Length: 67
Image 1 (cartoon, helix red, strand yellow):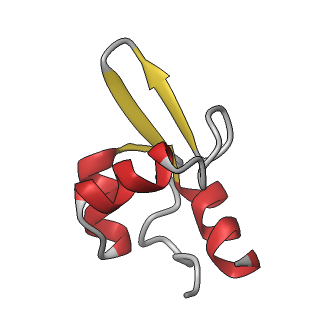
Image 2: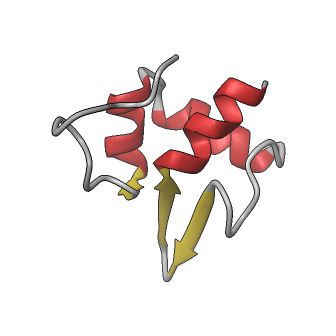
């Protein structure tokens, strides 16, 4: 999977789970499962702020390409 290039999504770094699901073609449940199984690390691929979870898209793209 390639990272978005050009002017399409240059500003998207931290996004909501809903937006990450849309961009990655995953369900929200699949994202929560990666967090629960500790495949994604807090402070790296995701971050919690209050009751919300945000996904670091560049870190997730790096995780995908390294996997």
